[in-house]
Length: 106
Image: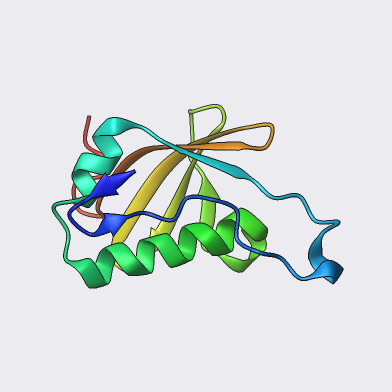
């Protein structure tokens, strides 16, 4: 996927042999979430991508919480920013990206 930051690496990272038995999540982006990412500074986008890669390997490594009243919806905290995503089986679909002050509006 191309953006003003170049190609976002959304492919599975290489995993050491001892970690191959762990479940890896596939990441899918909604178009709206990608457009929101383009509004942020490159440093923030880089931190978000790093956290998504960590989350892909192990949810316990990240600040992920289930959202109340929404089945299969979670949020990932990256500093003052949040990523809202849906988790079904091994597919993580990133729905929204934004600042913590307004990400929950709507």
